[in-house]
Length: 244
Image (cartoon, rainbow, N blue to C red; front, side, top):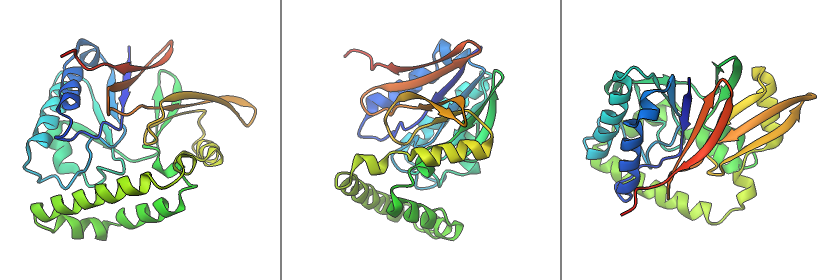
């Protein structure tokens, strides 16, 4: 009995070894024996629409559909890079879409699941940007553009994001502890799993006098990262690329 979590893969044609690692892991005995498999956002570097005819979305759909067809529910929660992923691709990929901030019971422990960007409230500029791009009208306008125009738009947005990330404090881009505690209190939980910050760790703290835990998933830039949860506890570990 094991439930698996991953996030922040940022799959992209420029890092084919990571895409292969993702495919191999979803086909592994560990994944195929899981009770459920969760992807908590930023599966790809940029999602330009469910109608993208590039090779990468097809490979992703084949991998997730294979796991789903093996009897493992595959849950997907959008991140800041793939919030335009919709029901059409989810159906193709055998994935169940989740709203950010859902609570799932994991072996008797209610657990809040988030991508994590909503917790980074010190980054006021990002939160304003997030509100703008999550507007359905904005999304509809982008998706009405031709594919090539969307590819160019996504490339420009990635470049601007890299420039901004390199120019602001890492502390500002991390979660705000008060926001974490307020969110967990509102949801009535003492355990939270999220990604986004690329700072894998398990944080234990007190919430209203009771033990609480925040688990941060790792990114997949240089290697994989997976959280395993079972009735006896949890473990956060890396997945190494095959040796050349």
